[in-house]
Each structure stands twice: as C-alpha cells, then as structure tokens.
Length: 102
Image (tube, rainbow, N blue to C red; front, top):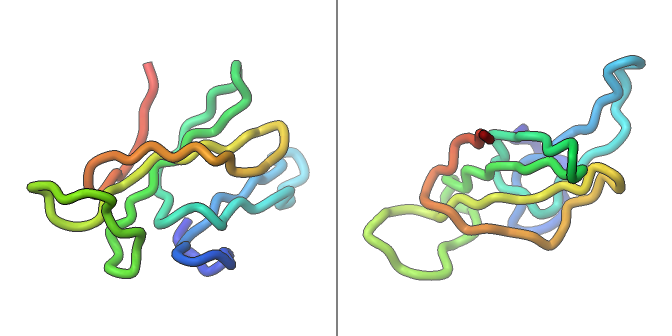
C-alpha cells in the first residue's frame, strides 16, 4: 500500500501483516519499499515477494542508464517467520506492477 508508514529515505509505502482470525495488524514492513503493488506468498520457504513500482519522481534512481525512461522497479523479499524485510532486492524493468508464480 502506498502510505507514509515508512521512516527511511527514499521510501513510500508498506505491507501490513494482518491476522485474518482476529482482524488485527500484527506487523508493518515499510522501510525498504517504494510503491509496493503486487505480492505473492511462498509458504514452503516462508517468504513473501513484493513488487515495487518505483514510478514516482522521488523514488530510488536507476543504477544504470537504459532505453526505458523512469526509475527501475524492483522485487523485495519479506521473511514471514520474522515479519522483516530481508536485504534482497532484484532490480527489474520500469513500473513493476505485479508478480505471479507458476
């Protein structure tokens, strides 16, 4: 969700972990995300993979030039056992809108 829950810079958006039985928030991951949009859960390995759009002009700048315009999107990984984002970041093309698994 694109909100102002994060305290890091640059950062825009967060992922809330909600207990579906009690409908209470159990945690918020925010400080390494930028416009998170798609999410998929890998229950076998206890990770959630998060697609970050990063299309805002204040977003994380690209680390290299390309023929595409704008900032690169990226994939983040949330450890479900700790509720914390890991240091994993995979740079993808511009406007990474979603994620899917086979």
